[in-house]
Length: 284
Image 1 (cartoon, rainbow, N blue to C red):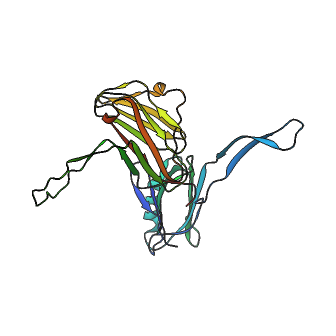
Image 2 (cartoon, rainbow, N blue to C red):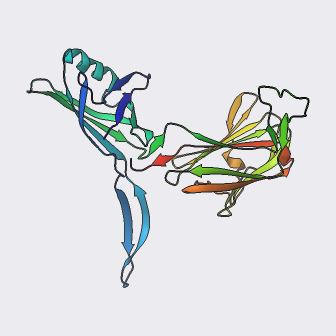
Image 3 (cartoon, rainbow, N blue to C red):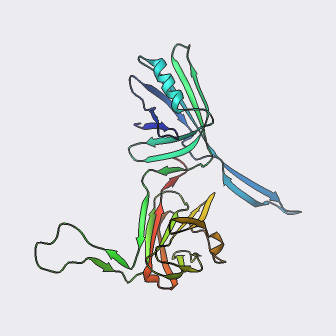
């Protein structure tokens, strides 16, 4: 199977581990499948069966086995050490004919056998976040005024639109990966109050109470382990998670098409909403 495997450190320096005649021969990549789940249960007193306490996905462990071939092996070995350093951050870029994803983790070990018949080695990477993510994010937009100014200009004298007024408050986004959190950006084009995002499929909602000034941007992340609500006003970021209304839910994206509805206590027409999503996969 054709694949491309690139490792990238925190400074952006990369090393290509893809199989070629004169560089690295990757013989095996273990850990591309979904990690194990941990399920905790407790027994009922005097009853059959048990009940679920919690269930979660374990961290991912990716192990890359490889050989070095060709000339200048020592130089390439030191080039590997410059990028792949134990305990340091590493980004794994993996691409096939059908998928282009990355995972992030930390190098556990990087061992190379210098004196064997073949110069071989193994890299072990621990990924606390078990998901692979698509390299291309997906954006969906809501605004009652949508720009329509395009080039080239019409050649005739017929009128053409500079903008389109939308009569719907719905916004749709497709998730082609596993269920996951996402990012919501709410921008105030004018003064507005208490914006709310409803999941039209489940009835769940996320509401931020209070007034928005012109130019305010609220950024909400709903990803497990990274749930935040941040207000950017006049270039200054502040945590406003305390402005979440009771009953709000950290909205998630299910597999397939997801529909949301945008409302506000006042001036919803002055709100622009952007949904930002990256497909996530437990196995690739």
